[in-house]
Length: 131
Image (cartoon, rainbow, N blue to C red; front, side):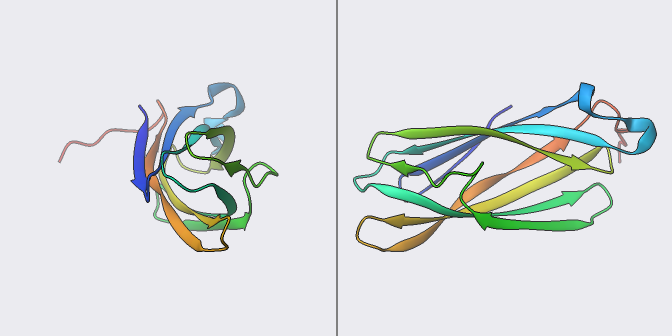
């Protein structure tokens, strides 16, 4: 299921996928890939400068990940262009949630932040509790 959010005419869509072949529930290792599409539907050319993620596992433990660009790139998106990449994250619990932001910059040097929608990381190994 894809999750989308738009900030300043830039849409970020994320689709997580549980990676059964890279996970080892018996060892407390659960891995997800997440495919991200960033679409520039605005009038300005922008560049993705930095990323910031907050990853929370099923026990509420939070890990912050920040750094320049994504997958080793700082893509430039002209109006109408998009950029896609896939990355992954491991957790020690069978479920969790991720949310984040990208720091963007216009050609004129204006910096602004766009939201990455919160998305859930759900594996088939989690127990479902009905309240």
